[in-house]
Length: 365
Length: 232
Image 1 (cartoon, helix red, strand yellow):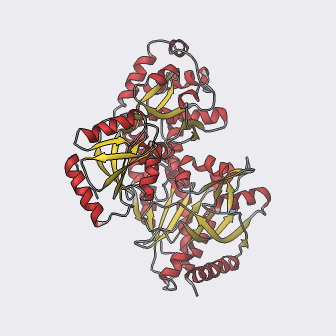
Image 2 (cartoon, rainbow over the protein chains, first blue to last red; image 1 turned 135 degrees about the horizontal axis):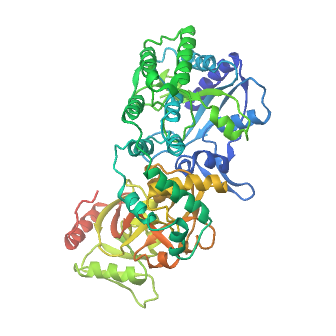
Image 3 (cartoon, rainbow over the protein chains, first blue to last red; image 1 turned 120 degrees about the vertical axis):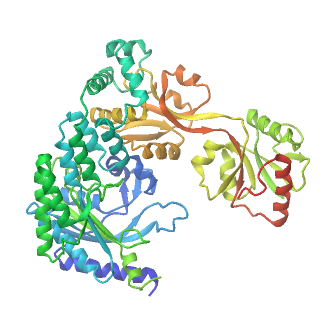
């Protein structure tokens, strides 16, 4: 067999296993409308996805992943609950000289189910573990829901919480904001000068003095933010004890069972994370029931916090040194709401790269 | 024979000729000043190739020229470090690639403010805040590194400063030397909005075929110019 045929055969084997597990096989177009993906991921995705132009349909992208078209298809006319499986190429630009493939097969499994989300999380993880057994991969798990719950529970303004939540997937910006809101970083010089200037008059006066009004952003929008900045400058920093708990949470890495007892230990000081920690506990029980040893399963609270992601709960990867993740996945409840035009269904799923599996099995070089 | 791409007209061409000339390598256009071919004196084994400054990056990447003079903004936008090596900064053609917003945005001073304004703008208007530019890669890399979200780049190949006034963008990212045109269009540079300080640079193509004779010619040229004998 040629390498491509061997990889496809591996993909077919995995797809058959997903179908065996109860999934309906689905297809998705290779050409996806760019607008949806850009609105979801922002301009950053242009650096990763191939964009092309269609004279009639406008900007199109070569499918960078299946999740978005599968969720769209489900939200439009899916059964409830539903399980889907798919196999096909995805396309990602790679840095020159990285040696990484820019076109490869993905085989995936997605579960849309309102009942017992933690059981669905465990179902997906255990299924992946079984299909990847014998390859000596290192599973890593995380839970972005706990971090988001911690932010929502902070004793600070809704505006600050919204700013932090908006940047949960951009760790650098998140940290910079948290440092500032917690008073750990000085107010940037530019902001100090800005606040000084804003004291010189009402926003309406200052806008008037700034000369000709240009642009779509209205005087009301500008004034609203100027007032919010002044109000924010008078907002006390997030309490040191509360901030310390959040920093602790960001760097938490421990075996899952140990992480759970640690989180239970800090819940009295950060009560808002209680429900998320309970869900974490329920998930570990569900995983144990599937034979996963949670006393050794790696847990990292910041796992999955990378750009171009949309996970907002359980996340997992199966890793091998020197390779991109062999498999990865997670829960993306919020994405279904964004793509469902108001409708919403809890969803969890993941993908495996058959090319990497075939390599690990020695089927291809 | 080493082919040296030099800008074919204007101030950039003259500054370039002056830079080489002051180091004993005389370049000039052959024949009439409408003819796009050049001659070089003072060094053997090299020939100037007169090109539009905007095409020099492409020619370097294709290996059709061995050396080339063009702005660092164009090369950083279009090429990677594995295609070209920087031989010398020439000290002219300075201009900054900056982000500018309407001066009436009294609440926006830094990139951080721009990010927050973009979030509110998207909520209010239902589309991402538009930044007009022709430097898509440099601008996107800059904003991505700073974790800015909720913006979109719209292409503008000229008169970019006018896009805000004309309603096709909310902000711009463009090259400026004095800031005069920005001010005239009621725009203001963000205090930390400097994306790239550009100047004219002599580049060497890593892709071009460098024969032993070419390398020997390069070494004697480099000695004349006072630049590295082994740029890559």
